Length: 125
Image 1 (cartoon, helix red, strand yellow):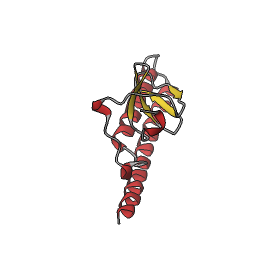
Image 2 (tube, rainbow, N blue to C red):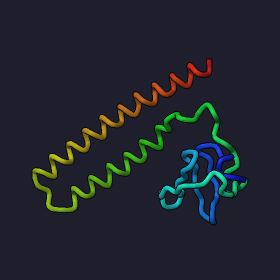
Image 3 (tube, rainbow, N blue to C red):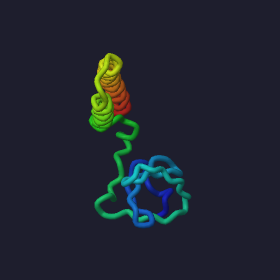
Image 4 (cartoon, rainbow, N blue to C red):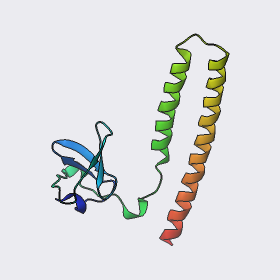
């Protein structure tokens, strides 16, 4: 199969590495996260477990749980860095700012997800 025949979001193998197509000419490595420019004519292999194409109607819909998981991982890493050195007033201030920003970002993601779902619902009508 040729790269251009894949749907965005579809997983495939190229040179024995697993990738996900994210645009007409770019794929992301599922192992390293690195992006790779792909030629339309590059031959790729779609294995049975990844052969299903993403639903056309869910394209562009935000996967809230994935985004929140990424934010949570980043948040925990930031807090860990703040707790490693001796805690001073600046570290405590930074920690409270990070926690407030996490809450704000989470509520914005929920709002965007809600709008995205409404758009999807309107398209289905």
